[in-house]
Amino acid sequence: METPSFLLEVSLAEADNEVEEPTVTDESAGAEGDWDPDDFPDWYRDKVAPTDDEGDEITEVVGDEPTDYPFELAAVDTLDRLTFAPITVLAGDNGSGKSTLVEAIAVAAGFNPEGGSRNLNFATHSTHSALHERLVLRWNSRPRWGWFLRAETFYGMASHITEDDDPVAGVAHIFPDLHNRSHGESFLTLAESRFTGRGLYLFDEPESALSIQGLMRLCVLINQSVAKGSQFIISTHSPLLMALPDAAVYELDADNGIEATTFDDLGSTVLWRRFFDDPATFHQLLA
Image 1: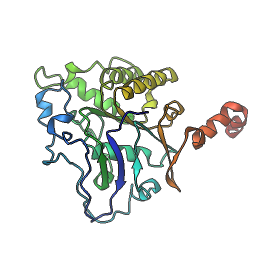
Image 2 (image 1 turned 180 degrees about the horizontal axis):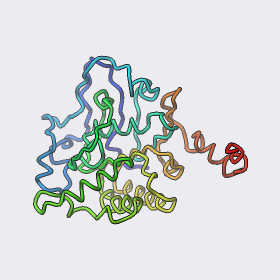
Image 3 (image 1 turned 180 degrees about the vertical axis):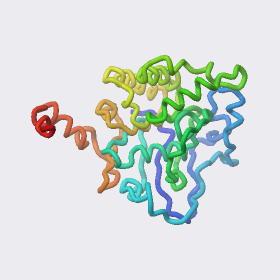
Image 4 (image 1 turned 90 degrees about the vertical axis):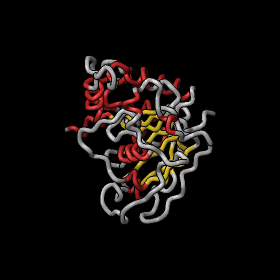
């Protein structure tokens, strides 16, 4: 896959140490307007936090060396330098830290912690960790558009969009109706209407709303969007998403941290193949 990535890599800075300025190779990147989609109202654009003169955002480390969640996770503790491809998949068991890492990358990159774009701001209950304060992001260029999709906060995001119906300052009119559909159809409608442009998209377990047919529609959309220059970072349990062509695959493990791997070597791939080869063996575990 020849498409260059916006976000090249992420690393974990030591607490109380100076952080190198994030590298942006595109000299025009990082300007205030670069993140704003053309169809967002000025009222939302005004809420975007200003960047510094160079457009760099992730430049500080604060606080003492943390010892509690999520810094005790092996995936965080061993995070040295994670390199991204046009499609990057984070796989692993529950509690391995993949959602925590995707969330922190999204927040460090300027996205709303509960999902949405950098302009779509809403909050129901803050649960994101402080990990984003320690991440150092290195960019190839700043994307003009992007989205952070969290399965667990999708309903709250859809409600915010629906209720923000002011004819001048609201955004409801620029989005499809997300509540008068099933969860899966709402997700696909949003994806097919908003995730097709050239942008940076971070997904946290998008498969939770989708059937295998819906996942196949999503995979087609991802490949089409990547062909236009988009980049996707996906935390998932879905074999379909893990098997996306040319994806960089990382497995997060409670003991070993983060390891680059392949779809065939993922622990979940091995278990699924054993199940489909002989479901009766797994039925014995239910007795």
